[in-house]
Image (tube, rainbow over all chains, first blue to last red):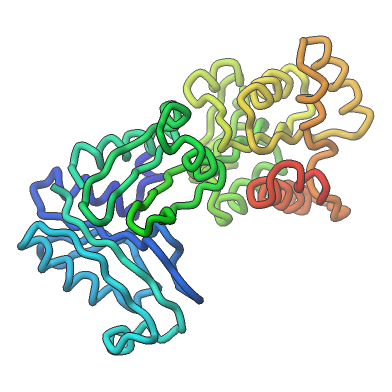
Length: 108
Length: 231
């Protein structure tokens, strides 16, 4: 069973939280076009910026981690959107033509 | 999300039970529905569809997100035979959890199956610890009714997404007679893929393993009826 949950974001989130780390969970909730990771994909982030899992093929993880760190301070949740129409998305590199919405929440 | 909720979700996943996490992305509120509770939930219809497809997604309201957790597919091969030696690493590459069961300790050795979950017990014993479920594929590969028949009956009873059995049409004919005599329904017996594997004229054990794995993947991705058509 331990093998099954290896590199598993949800298992990692629980383990990190149990170890006393602050943890945020990011989930791909909607995609349009050629999004690299399917709806339901998770990325887990701790307060030091360590992460496990993915919400894109590596394109927007940096931006999601940045947002997550802010949310870990405030305790709020946030819906992020990345896409070709969005300047930020180009800047963070989701140039594959897709658009995704990512929900970020702290694990309290 | 509350840590207790995350723990409960992970507990279901580790136990190979399906569950759905329902999150209101506007408020951040969430609740967990286990598969066993889904039928009595206000969202029963939606949950039933989601649990079948395994797909997470947003509801039409644009704010309620369903994280659908269904167990990863598992392949249990009955028989630590030559075909299984090829099948185990291939199936692992394809993302299946692989377990091999064979009471014959001369066959079921670590040396023949490095890094594979191997149970050198009779299926009657082994299945007490790893019961079959709907997310399990079972391939009976020993040719020996004493070893194969029990797990085949269990696989059909558990609604495994794939059930296949090695043997010629003649061998399978006798198997069908035995299973019917043992009280297995004819519709269930019909679900057994035999002769096993897609018809690619496989000859060697490794080629038969490819045919079996392809049939398992077809059952997983297209649904059992489609896999039958493909076969």
